[in-house]
Amino acid sequence: MPTSRKITSPETGRPVSRNALLLILVLLLVACTTSRIDVARHVSTDLSPDTGIVLLARKKDGGQKTEEDFMECLNNALAKMQLLVRLYPEQDFLDNLFPWFESRTAPATPAELPALLNRPGVREKITEIGVRYIVWVDGSSERVDGGGGMSCAVGPGGGGCFGFVWWDTASVYETNIWDLQKARSVGAVSADASGMSYVPALLVPVPLIARTQNAACKGVAEQLREFFSEGRAL
Amino acid sequence: MRITRTAKRETASLRGIGLPFPALCALTLAVCACSTPVHVDSAFPRPVVASLPIDAGVYYDEPLRQYAFKKEADENSLAWDIEIGPAHVRLYDQLFQPVFENLVQVDGLRSGSGLRPVSIIIKPSIDEYTLQTPRDTATDFYVVEIHYKLAFYSPSGELIQRWSYSGRGRSRSELFSADESVQKATVAAMRDAAAWLLIELAKHPDFHTPLQAQQSDNANIPEDHES
Image 1 (cartoon, rainbow over the protein chains, first blue to last red):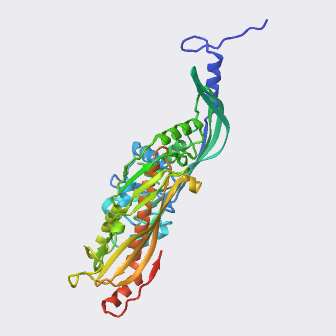
Image 2 (image 1 turned 60 degrees about the horizontal axis):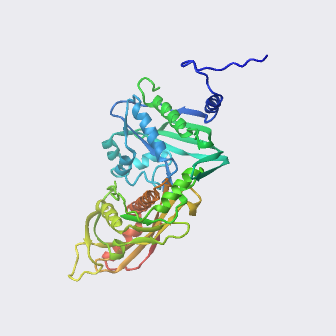
Image 3 (image 1 turned 135 degrees about the horizontal axis):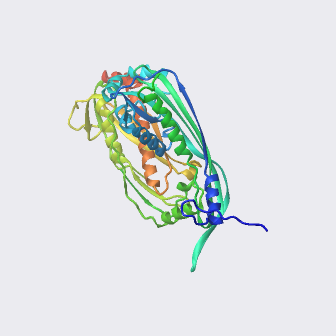
């Protein structure tokens, strides 16, 4: 005679329903994010509390590809870390050095830094605001694939949705760290995160979102800390 | 600068969402939206440039001061009424102050009261403002392009030369804030054009040579110089 064993919650001792188990299983399986971080370090950084760093979104064709919320995430993540440098606001830097870091004028490679620093007033302004390192940020999160369908209906007795929607997101970001004082590249960090998001709906849609952008942000911030923390510099 | 809009339907900012429910919410709210005045922060930074040893006058005519981009609503787009004239006056004031040793604002190209204490008069103007929505570009971006002309006149009001240049700005489309995206793209286009202008004013020999010729009353040949 077959016997059935009920699975019980370890905390309450109550049996866990099959639907709840299914939901837990789904939560465990879906919305996973895989990420890869690559770091290249060329030279060591000189750190002191007076050293300023600024995160700049790389602009092309009059605008930036990198989302503003990614820049905000990166700034917030670095602000929470015990860095031996101070973060300088991006917009203040662009305004103080106007027009030399705009879309069409910003240096594309460290080799262009000496010419820029020799322009009247530029080196003096950079010294005045105390920014030593620029962290160029480029990249974005894109939806690369997707499918499924969902339909919703509302009537006098209530409403609901039925269906299943999924999509893949890829977040690819690259940062390059430049030393303004020595006019050279210090290193680079790149992050590549991908994940699949689902929205199953049985009356109520349950979005299970793969936070690829957040994973990339955390990964990049963690590696940038290696460049700007005490005892971590080469 | 002020942007107002009347909305019939806004689908452009929904690109990339891919979910029917938020799309439905966005569409519903967009349909309900009425004219929305938006105040753009149009403060522009003082540029870091070397000063030219020139006493210049700048003339802002009424078409520049009151320039506005107007577009009627159609089945794919909002109605737009974007006033960019006042912001450009502030931008040019901010740009020209550090570029020229002395800068004065003049109220006309020709002076009725004899000689002016300037060696050149500059008259900026906006040729064209174009706005492309994400629907137009099939991307997630609003794109603004502004085409300008900058005319150089002698103190007596004779045209020396004219430059044509343009600026381009992009801003990512955000849900429920098409006007904010357009504002950002507009400011980006203005800064982009200003960057080009500052560099050319400092380096371009076409600017200095005809000016010196004009000062010695030897030349008065209008030229076009394009970005």
